[in-house]
Image (cartoon, rainbow, N blue to C red; front, top):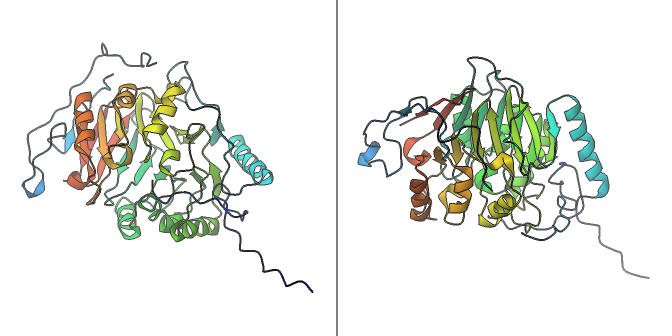
Length: 385
């Protein structure tokens, strides 16, 4: 008589659907330029700054803002082979079909529009719905320590949370402070703890849709996040170059380029925000290999200038590069960073930002950094300290 076979191991939730799937592959726990709408010849409104010192006697580093408010300013312009098949951990063809059906139903409601990557062509935003006169899009880089957490609010009050930092307590305090009682959209750039831990309690705000890179995390934090989102019936969607209408604000989801290894950082989801002529770009913890892949695609939605740009990977040396920044052409850079032992932000990266002429904000020195963008491309910038 043959011995009794052991029971199969319990199946983990699929990264893109939140439903049970076959055992996942383990992912590492860590980590052409064309004329833009506004050119160098465009009329600009200078940003006023005054000399000041940051708390504790620390002066603003070169390239950093000297004051806590910037006057309205115009944006200044400043390879892999064929991809291997990549699905969410253990995702079957049936689960892939379910994702398409869910995305299609959202598209039918006009909330999410599926489209291919945008190589070449005109700058993004052509044909976008007109922004309301006098309205602003608010983008807050929340001070949550060493980690990313960005809150976006449309003029109509629609909200999106991109990453949540590693501290649930700090994120909760920030959401309460800014009066957030409901989320329409939640995005995890990737599944590292300093980006998703705070999303677990934030799931109680009942986001309608959760977008991630399709690679499930290997930690208990990731499993808690999946369960929390399932409990509120959030729709799990894999990043695939969707355009999300957050009221009158267009959110262009930037999927990782083909051929990336199964590494969380190298599969960071990007997000291009557009409100009229105001543009912002967030790209998680992307490393040079990923940004080179995006550059090879010659994507119009990644061509600058961008009035607002989030520093890649908290200012790590393997994030931003001269070639990438020459394509993005940021006017303002925000580094989401806290006390850390990694040396973030590095002197090399800060030097790159100075070379672009961008103003640099840091959440470890300035606290929460808030930008209010108007449809004509002007904006204001505020810091907590």
